[in-house]
Image (cartoon, rainbow, N blue to C red; front, side, top):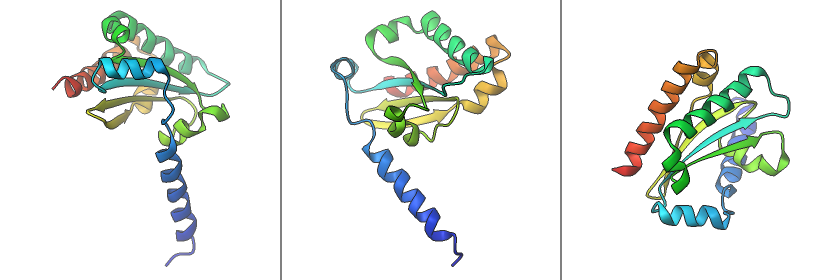
Length: 152
C-alpha cells in the first residue's frame, strides 16, 4: 500500500461526514415552498469569494437575469430558487464542502421526490461568460432538463 493512502482515506471520510451534516436547518419559508412543490425543487447555487472578478460578477448577473426573464413563475412558487453564497464565510462551510465549491462555482441542484442530484456548471460558466446569449441558452437548457425531471 502506498504511504499516502491513509491521508486520502481520512480526507474522503471527513468530506462525507461534513456533507451528510449539511443542509439540515431550514427556514420556515423553505419548508413552505417545499410543501407547495411536493418536496421537489431546483436550487441554483452561485458560490463566490470575497474578491470577485468581472467574469464572476457576469456569471451572477446573467444567471439572475435568466431566472427573472424566463422563470419568474417558478421562482414565485419556490420551485426554483437562487442562492448567492460567499465561500469564504465560515457560516457557509458545510454547503461549500457538500458541493466541493471553491472560488466561483455554479451549481444546479435538483431535488425530486426527496432525492438530490446536481450538475456543476462552473467550467461551462467560465467558458461562456463572455457570450451572454450562449451562457443563458446553456443555463436554460440545464434548467429545462431539471424541470422535466421534477415534473415527470
